[in-house]
Image (cartoon, rainbow, N blue to C red; front, side, top):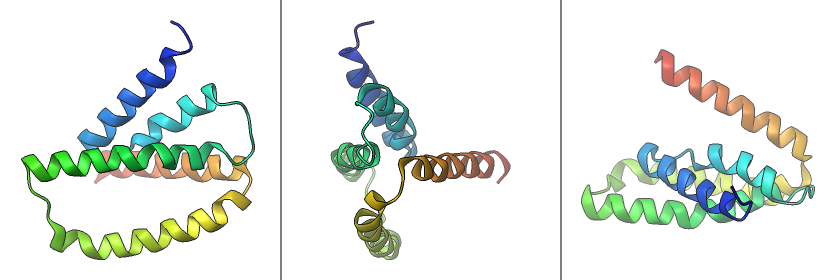
Length: 118
């Protein structure tokens, strides 16, 4: 497979996972981006966030059109996640990529165990 198709296939997989599960596109994007992007300290996670924003907007639009959105239940989480996203954007680039990968991997394992057990 040509390397030029890797981002396209990775994007389709990330969008599919994000649309089906409501999140999780980053689980696909981080490994794909780490293989495609040149190894630059601090560029992997911001690139992932930049790709995930439009992907999430598409997902929320489709859910809104076909299923309706429970905005009353979502607002408290939107406010908190907005604040967390702001703080992570400000300070995340100052953290070493290795630490960010460890945090990301730990959250993936924790989420997987929670999904299987609860």
